[in-house]
Length: 321
Image (cartoon, rainbow, N blue to C red; front, side, top):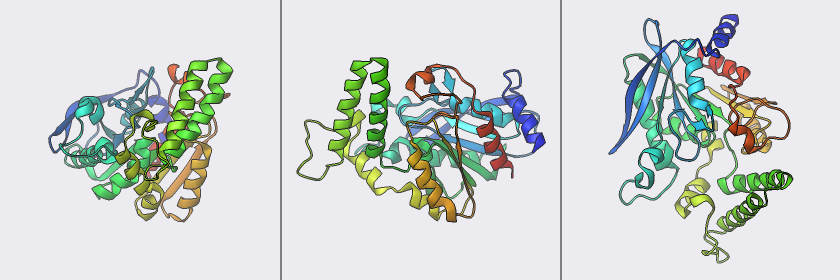
């Protein structure tokens, strides 16, 4: 454990990023996504590998959020500890509105799952990687979909789920809107409050899809489609995770307003009977696994902060045990 902690402290230093970065391409049918394989330098033999899966939106391979690069920071720390990683640009970033196969409906599978399964397959076939030690690390939406990725892949050695939602997307949006309305009101940001009000109305409307009460003029929030809502309603990440026998590590931030504390409680209860699951909460950590104090706000995402050392330590310990 002391060796891991020493290595982790070195990993968090900007001077200690000894690794080889190899350009790769993740291919799914006709879609090709540029990415990078980060391999520990001066390591003999095959090494474990972590495949990163993004949160919602057209994320780049580093999952850049303001000045913070969530995935790159983790990849750098992993490499110092003898662990490789594979990260790639999300399909919706590379292809924009043309990310769907012809005739397909928009949903989580084409946005995230299909390419993550391909990325796991890619990692397993790389000469530098131990194919029996390939992990999926998902953040937010990517964490919620990680159980399905593992189920469809069949080659995943374990899951690392950072801030995984357990609620349905529309319920999650409503919780976020209610929280942010209060934050923006205190800041005097009246326009932002009105946007949250409109989004909440659209989210409530979305819950009426299939009923006569659904108002097409109001529509759905944030560019969602009925096919997305249908997929979300049919997919139960908690049930899928419960069915998996592979090791699972979940990390929640108590200061995370995007995936509220209630989600932690749902996962904790559900995974209590799972033989290989570890569910942890970090009381000073936010949605992007950065530490802070006080009332959490979107404004702190604009501040460059280091990855929580304790979260990083626990990720490394989970992979190495």
